Image 1 (cartoon, one colour):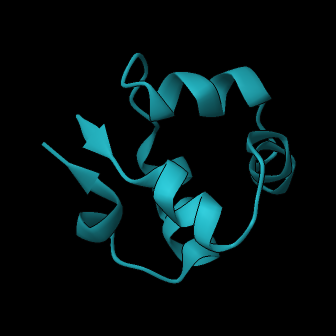
Image 2: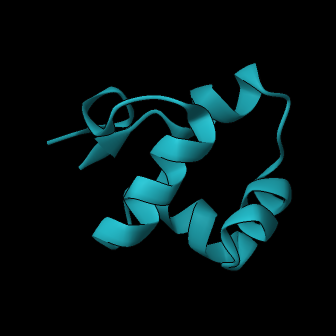
Length: 62
């Protein structure tokens, strides 16, 4: 699964650590998701879309 988390983070000038802290996960988790090594839970994906104010399909692709 591909994603645009890095793009949305850069738009908001947010580091991986900043995002991880807001989502209450580790920076390593954010890194693994961005690199396609880990698929987030539905709950985590929805939290990301709320934080970035976008739709799930804007953030993630199959």
